[in-house]
Length: 285
DNA sequence: TAGGCGTGGCT
DNA sequence: TAGCCAAGCCT
Image (cartoon, rainbow, N blue to C red; front, side, top):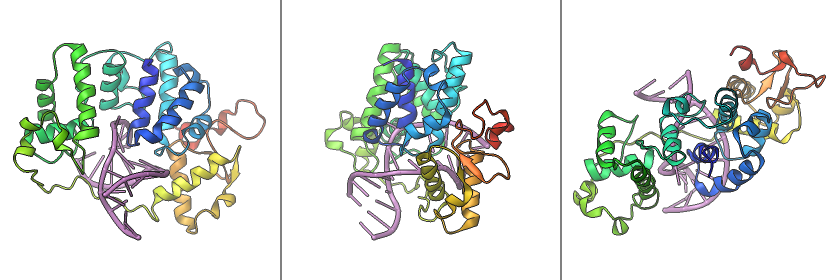
């Protein structure tokens, strides 16, 4: 796998089950095998190829990252954590994962699975929450091998352990290779309360409306009148709010007052490079 | 820093 | 059935 392929996989796998990622990932890399290839496409192309993976802003940010890689790094995914971290949509975890799995560097790859494993084994707690703490980094740094190649293996192994064995709801302790040293298991699986985060209501949420609107725009080849979107949701205020949010987030383009909406990159009109017809958001960036 | 951000399978 | 859950990032 190329560093670009690894970067794409990490972005897609964030918050999305691997089984759903695989087909999109394969067709995506088949179409855009390098960052410059994606950068040459439109955001609309990226959003349609993203399909129903969810969190479509990831597709927009991946497109932005591809552009930055093309213009600022000669088309090559950067190696340094700082440069990776500076790319749109690349946070601490993804930068560490790309540095590790693409370039063989030693990093603390603290995704939700690794953090849960460490919380249970080291602290005897059912899980972790919030942002990564200094003590979590100390524990991870103490446990990870010093040698970079071994540290990469350790990172991959600890992620797998959390994803397949030390799972959130039904941990398979009988099959766990480190159960004998797991403080949480030895303590009898205490449930120290601390609910991670209350699940947000889905039905009737702005997220649901955004999903409906974007799905409709993905299906259309070009600009769509706002009135064509009204039938998708019966509360006009919420529909307008959701649409405005999509524009703000760079997922939808429009011209203020025009009542036309489209996926960024497929501007209506003359067909010439339409400077003034980018999204409202882009005009201020 | 808590909350917003999609989607669909699983229990 | 209605939550719960899945390799985060950003503001």
